Length: 224
Image 1: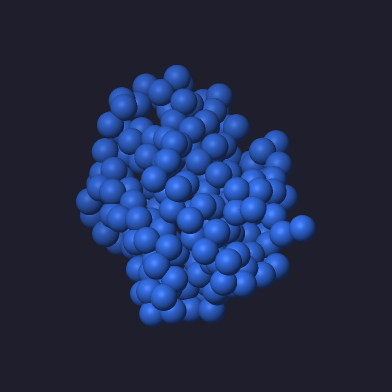
Image 2: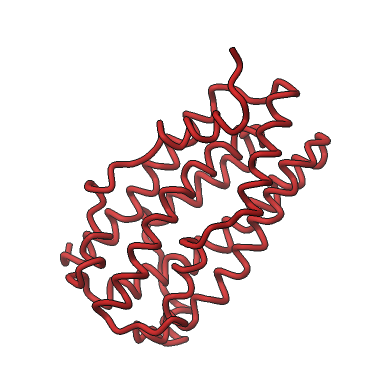
């Protein structure tokens, strides 16, 4: 029996969910052990991730629209708009971490942190939009949980104000509009026969590249 879109979104998220106990950095931020400098590095890396992901989502929206997949196009357009908002919320985080404008402008990103957006770019060029919707939605669930934990840690142990936590709050907060658009996109994909097993491969690789992001920053926190 073919699963419904809701069932497929749920089972995909379950199958691709990472083990939170294996994240090397988030628990350190959660209990205040991570250096403030490491959080600043996270923000600096995101300064490069965000514009790359935004362009990737815009390209996916265009590809979906060209193939008359308007449901996926709407989903990716919303994601692109969200990245613009995320970029605006980085500045208070820079200030709280003591990152100046000069460093932000000249910072050289690390390969382990930029593998994720590089793969999202690959998906923008090669992945069927409906499969990419499924993969990204599962990955966003894990990312949102990490952001919620980090935001609590920054408030509890680092004294960060709400504005400085805004970047993490953005991704931790429920996004019912995005959820509805994802459901519509997957439903349309199922009806058109555009959903394949590739979404599991896409999601698995996204998860590994996100692990690289956290592991790279954890190495910096430990002085490696």
